[in-house]
Image 1: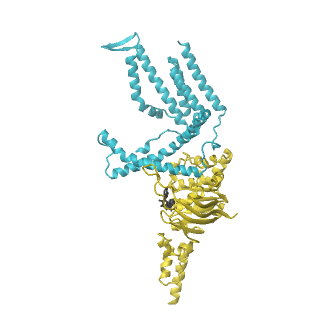
Image 2: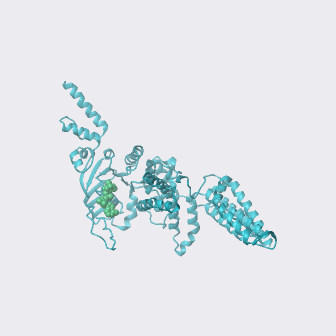
Image 3: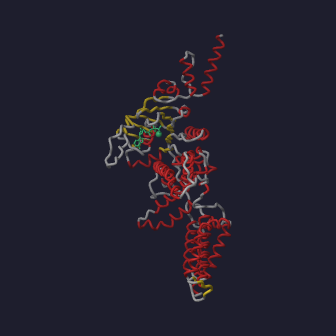
Length: 268
Length: 293
Ligand SMILES: Nc1ncnc2c1ncn2[C@@H]1O[C@H](COP(=O)(O)OP(=O)(O)OP(=O)(O)O)[C@@H](O)[C@H]1O
Ligand SMILES: [Mg+2]
């Protein structure tokens, strides 16, 4: 049952978006996020929405998948909407009952917030859906490389991320095994009160930790045997290379965002 | 130079455990006591010994994961104690471990095979070439874009071997590479090892608990409590059935059968290690018996 979890979900494909340089994809996503948060007019959202829709169509990621990524945050969306409805207000009262006052401004604000968050989630999901985790780590390492100047361990961070990604399936499989073993000994894992359930986790987490440490030690030895000595002097099999297409893609995204910001300023 | 590995009077003891008071406890007894062993280039050596006899400890001396307390270890003429040779030694003598899951670093097969050449600072184009070549050598080229978690145990272990081959080593040390595999996986890995030895002349040191695997080597070394106690060709070692049993080791089933027959007074040489040899000997024995009637 744990096997169904996929983290850092990636859906392989061959679309323009899939093939775009991951560094540019990350920068474009950041641009989108900033624009969505900076803009406070309807037009920003419309332009942002068109942009996200365009990317979705180009990437050929089915809308169903995006809906899946949205579902877990529905409660948060609802909560935000209610908060905005209740606490943001102007003079245009729509409905009033005792101390609760719903205004046009509140309604606008809550719709605005919902659309903004949805675009945000869908935009960043499109990034992880179309980029393999390994490329994503490479891109983060490459984008953060200026930080090496201030002694920030960029290579080490990227290495840790990729090892974590590598071991997620292994550790999930192991957790499954330990859970079956404990169930075979009569442990009840999926019933009982919350405290009991938490307590039932201990006999699973302890062996998992012990084995994770043993794995870490063996992996470290194996890495040393393969001449690992940190990031210095290391080359890569796959070089990230930006081509004309990436620059064009970036330019288009930039124009979209610049448009959104301009409209935002003009509409004030 | 014809010697790949030259161990002279190796002595090693693991550092004592740090007690609860923060002070080291009593010193451990030596795990290796005076191990001397030379391994020729291009040879295929099997190392046997019961659990805890010091096989893995010896193996870790070959690529300077551990350094000897006394004695010297030379790999292709380089002393492992010489720190400036560290990466040259590790590149020359690759190491494959028991659990394939704990030695695969990357999320994609070809990325993992590229790991060692990347560390060595090899040019990207050359890395590509080496990765393809290594994956073809172990018969895993079609799986180059798979995630390691999608592979079987034997396939994972072959990827681990490819990861070592990509360093272009002269020698590969395998520490119980088949211990966690099913019979099919074991066969795949053994075939790969044999091919690398025969076709590419790579020196193989195979630590194993399977006598049938050891029987495929040119030479069998038996280690017992940190000392080399037997060192000869497989037939010569395995035919000493009583000595092997005293050391807590088995012999291949066919050798045992031949030995039992020999002990019972039949004219069968106990120096039999393969099924074919055994079959031939039994046939000869039976035809002689029918002639005598
Ligand atoms: N890290 C360690 N610290 C202390 N003692 C150790 C350590 N590793 C191994 N030993 C001890 O050294 C001895 C030899 O261990 P080694 O792993 O070399 O044996 P082995 O022949 O490889 O056994 P196996 O067949 O089980 O793999 C054992 O008695 C073991 O307890
Ligand atoms: Mg061992």
